[in-house]
Image 1 (tube, rainbow, N blue to C red):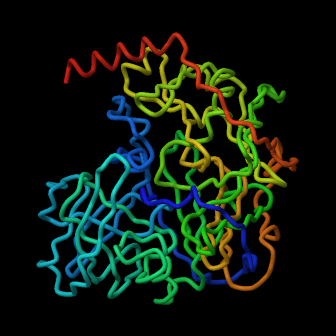
Image 2 (cartoon, rainbow, N blue to C red):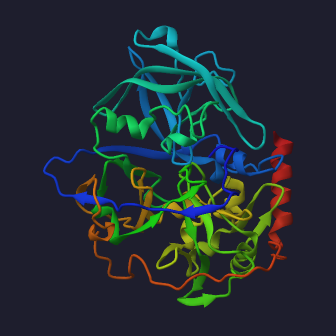
Image 3 (cartoon, one colour):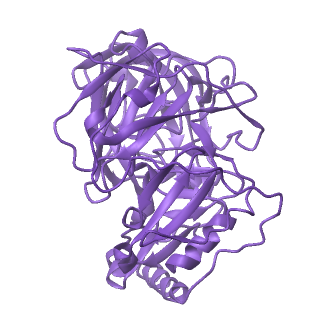
Length: 457
């Protein structure tokens, strides 16, 4: 998600059609497998004003995949990101290189390269950026080839690894974007070149311990979720669809099945919540986060932009409930507690996967791992179901066009809990939040570890 986000503007929910899902002998779908590994944490840069990052592996983990560009092919590794819309990679002579671990692209070594323009420019909140050219060339992955595909080549920037952005074309980083000058990006190119029939895809990240996942373009895999998909309209910005945001109506916490008080009243729910695979953590308003931090014993480190928590809390029976109006999605606290450096883990200190932001929400990987998510760019809808971490044989259905309702696509049967629980509307109030996220006794311990690491460096 670029720093030029317009989420603070007025939001209006609009939806015209529902996703239709069809049984086919040979569905027109494309599946990518990817893995979670260390990356440059771009989304934290976009969102945070912290001047430095705690030495922390957990917040710098993302989901990466391999592509081949040009003729002959040049291999690159990119981060999968539903919160942006461009594929960009580093040029061989980029200021961010040598890009030994992730690869780079050299246009002079490709016989199918053509120059488009020099309009590529993306800037993050902390001032880091990537700039360069848009080009056309051949893109290969799995058994699929896209010809004359437009992507960006960065020659100046701060990250060794590029990004595969699969959002709306209206959110492209081109200087001429936001309502004019958009080009055919990756999801649209898959449709235009006959790989899939509709610009939609489903995302399954598996659980935290597995460190892998799949994205299925043009289809859903009912083996990988429980119950039925619940469909929400994507909210628009001034009649434009820019980001994958839906209305979040409240956040609740339970322990041993009993409700724990969360201050939802100080936040004006519903608020827009962006589902962003390029962000490691989940961010909610401070007023709601403060009571959650207090209940689970977490400490918010404002100087670093996220919280820490005792690793042993992952064994406590806490469950987060994210309300979306008529249903909610549950996330076990074990998916919200991330190991950091080995020194801190040995001291029973982990990263808390829930952080704070004002006036909106950002549902990153710590939320998405517990959900099966269908992003329907054609109908401007998001569909959600509870992820199945132990799927059996794949059952892939093709996403088509039409007005059939999403809930007809029923997934696996779960014996312990339903996929989605009915709930009432979230609490609403005009009151301003005066809450602050608490700091516990482990804050000084964390600070001591950080100082020690910096001294070693």
